Image (cartoon, rainbow, N blue to C red):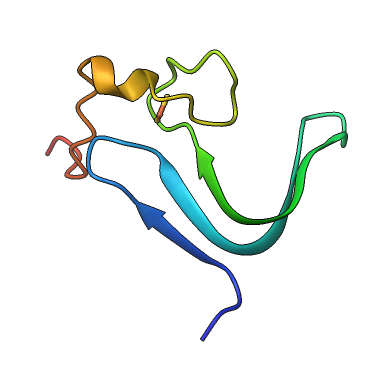
Length: 67
Ligand code: FES
C-alpha cells in the first residue's frame, strides 16, 4: 500500500492523503507535510492549485470521457 493516496471526489477536488509536498511551476513549496491536501480539478479555485470550494457552484466532474 502506498504512503500517499489520491482520491477523485465526485464533482470535487483530488484529495491527496498522506504526507506530501506540493510545489508550484518554479519549484516553490506551497504545502509540505499536510496529512490531507485537496487539489482543484474544476479550474475555478482562486487559490490554485488548492481547492477553495468553488466547485460547489455547479462543477460536473463526470469521470467518463466522451466516446
Ligand atoms: S475542485 Fe474545488 S475549487 Fe476546484
